[in-house]
Image 1 (cartoon, rainbow, N blue to C red):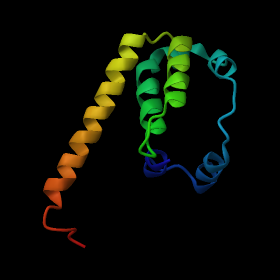
Image 2 (cartoon, rainbow, N blue to C red):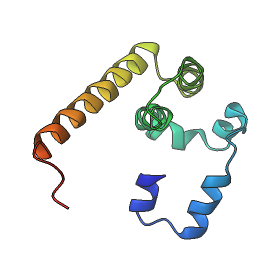
Image 3 (cartoon, rainbow, N blue to C red):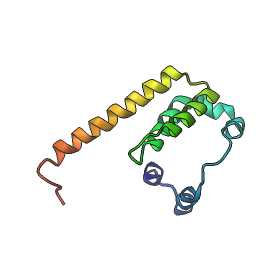
Image 4 (tube, rainbow, N blue to C red):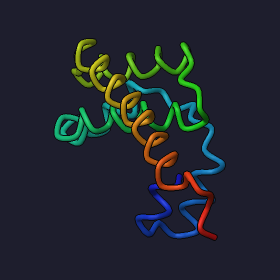
Length: 108
């Protein structure tokens, strides 16, 4: 949500996303236009991992769903694992950065 809001999404879109139950059938969603998923399949999986772990936990159930989506759009298990590792490394690097930037307290 934060990325979408920061990129200029309207309040109406943000409200709709807040209500979205995420119960759509993945196969049906992907079948609507496979070319979209082909061009951005790696970034889609990367963003899915980030989204699933945004609450601080990337649960086993979320991992299963990410892998299901990856399989449906042709992203290998090896690439999924690499993307998960990158996300974990980015999270650690972010924490490290915050510790250094605000080691004397928040500036405001």
